[in-house]
Image 1 (cartoon, rainbow, N blue to C red):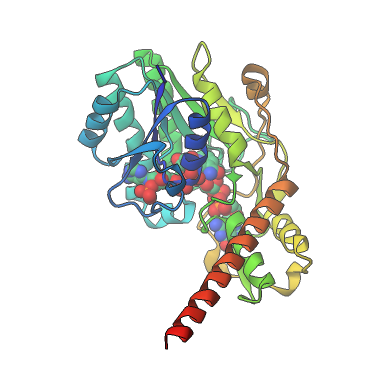
Image 2: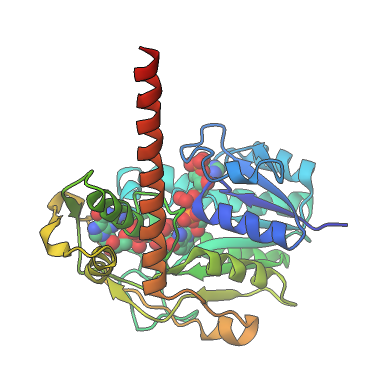
Length: 336
Ligand code: NDP
Ligand code: GDR
């Protein structure tokens, strides 16, 4: 009998990659979708007929209980969150309700319905914030710098607490930034790849950014979802940092992305103070030695490979949309 997995946040970037990965492993995949989804179904359309989608909300305890009772999954991957850092400064309470307390709601449902369900919590390098050491590992202390980071620190510790208190197989994956062509356009890598493609195609002439000195350890989402699954296949649960161990600045990212299409970034990029955060995380770089040793996990896609993949995907998508618009215009002219 196929193993059943429930993914919260299946309409997000990681949800799409994880669903595809689990289907490839022969899982019966179920996804939780908010009736008021903001991400929409663009990413889940490709899963149609292969993954089953169900309505529920991390803000609503009974909806989660009902869902677990219906599906009775073997594994739950809690990827749902208000995940954009600037929004967390604007909506700190909504962020806490979803990104922090939402974790407890899922854990409570597991405790009530079936404590043998294996649980993965999507924790974040944003918990390290103003870093206490470099690189950061599972023992590094937290100093979150945004309501989002604070909410994720709560989610991490409640996961540890339910493991220690109730013996639930609960793992916290402390994932550093991971990106892909499916990344939301509000995040800096995709904002850059989308703008570079538009500039190259003559549809845009400026790209406005905030803190270009910020440094991040960027990896490929496809590599990172594999680590989530690996954590739940261990004999004992634990917490793992997932990262490449290499950091780059936003400036490096921009330079590389423009160079990929033969342009000089300095002619197109402007800094905009309104895009600066009340407090930012200036540098992050992860040490994934534990994951390498215990899970046998290692990233496969390099930073340069990731940037090229994202810019090429946006070039292709936008050029395709342009062709479609032109051919539709042609149809309308013929009709007139
Ligand atoms: P996305 O923002 O792409 O996806 C977040 C998902 O959460 C969406 O499907 C969204 O659905 C869903 N969601 C938001 N609010 C609720 C709610 N109240 N109830 C149910 N679902 C909700 O994030 P990613 O895929 O990039 O990340 C996945 C997880 O990993 C997140 O928890 C994120 O914080 C965390 N993380 C991500 C990292 C990264 O670099 N990508 C790094 C470390 C951690 P919709 O809005 O459509 O309802
Ligand atoms: P982050 O990702 O906050 O690290 O959170 P994001 O891509 O938003 O920012 C990374 C860094 O780039 C700087 N920056 C800009 N960021 C955005 N979004 N837009 C800009 O115009 C811009 N200019 C500079 C930011 O200041 C920041 O320093 C992501 C999310 O996926 C979280 O959910 C996840 O937990 C962490 O990664 C790990």
